[in-house]
Image 1 (cartoon, rainbow, N blue to C red):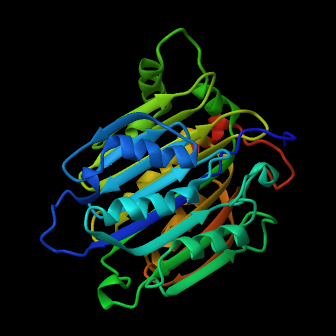
Image 2 (image 1 turned 90 degrees about the vertical axis):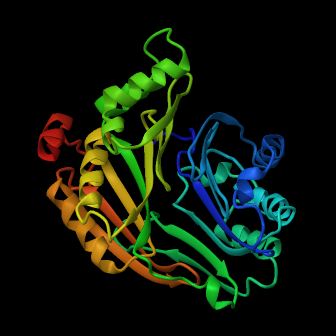
Image 3 (image 1 turned 180 degrees about the vertical axis):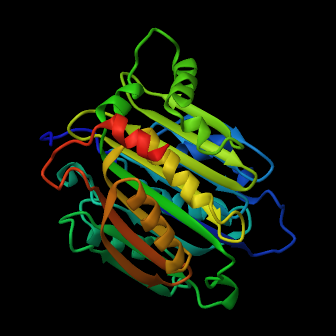
Length: 357
């Protein structure tokens, strides 16, 4: 492991709002002026580098990860040393100006590779929770924070904070939808090297070449893709498929390589969807270590995840389950390349890809 490097692990914030006046404009938060969004992101210390939209939501690729804006929901993921939680108060104020009031909040992140480099309020999870407690209004009175700690992978934890109000309309309702957050480290070098600049091509054309060459475009062929390649290496993409988003971020440097994948799914749709997605994601990155958090679904789906990854040569190390107000069940699982034996031996990428195929 390098002494220091770029922090790939993202911080993720999700805010849901409800209408103070039900007659308000249906576009909601999508009406916020772009200059105001830029001012909000300046507090976080990132910028918009590319954007895509459809009839349901707006998707932004940021200089550090992604942002999605629905009429009554905002999701922001940022990596590096960004100060994500400094967006909470500005977002609540912007929403209030449109007749919206915050009704749910969820903050998640993994364990930082370089925690000593994080600025306030991200120096510790305790600081993050205290900061959120101060930012959120008093009517979000049902709150819970937890560090989900699998026992077999020391230091590989999942941090969750959730808050909601007492109104029944704001409580978690299991409609079959779920959010999957995948974190991958120790990427196969052959796979990771595909995310370096190899020509004089512009970032936009290089990003499209990366999307095609790596197989990322095949993960959800229905999705419209907005991608971006960073100099000298790194990659981000957002996919939009009706009201559902997906997003990928890659930090390919040796010693601290990292990739993430996130999407929304629904168990009432195609039952094999999550299996197909994970098989394709593993094929793209061939990670040695992998963690998956599923929010809003029963443990049955996590069993599908476990069996899928085990079939791909990733050994299940542990699973942790907890309940959070307004969001239901969170299941956090960790996996390790079974052929490495935990001693640093690298699985051959060609062998792993054959098993995926």
